Image (cartoon, rainbow, N blue to C red; front, side, top):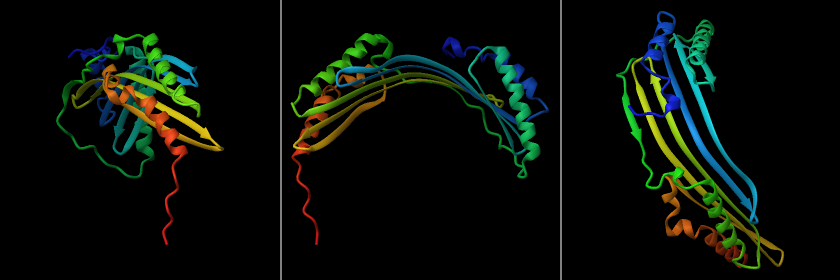
Length: 240
């Protein structure tokens, strides 16, 4: 199975050690680990409020014994840290079992082994942060210049590349990769003491191709147009 380097620590050797540690101590364990790479770009009135890139690596360990659960979270994905965290999760499950009044078991199931990757047509990594900033700047310019009655604009771009792994003592090993992108446009218009706001967004699972359509290209213009239209909207006639 082709997985990212950061998650290759969960190999057969580590899984064998986890099973050895848990043997005759707990009934069940599972681990969820993942890496998220992302960008956040936030502009208001054509000025930058935030431009950031980040990567978040985390791992959650869950253990179970006769109705008692143990949980442990760590950010260091080296074998020593994982084994240490796993041992702590075992102790927590054992302590929880002693305090639990309701005893029960987890039903066994067949192990699942699957590699699921959602391929983007235009991966996020194919354009740099500078080009992503330019996209936001262009939408800000379009909204701000739409009308003299536009008093406030905000455009937010968010993207994430997520790689996640799930494994358990039953032999399950599930790996997933996907990308998510969202673009938000908010515009305020004001006239004669009346202020109105319009908000639109596009996004979903995928890469830069999400922005390569008419709806995405016109999102800031649409927000500006709607805000202006709302200034002149009439109240509905009240019912009897």
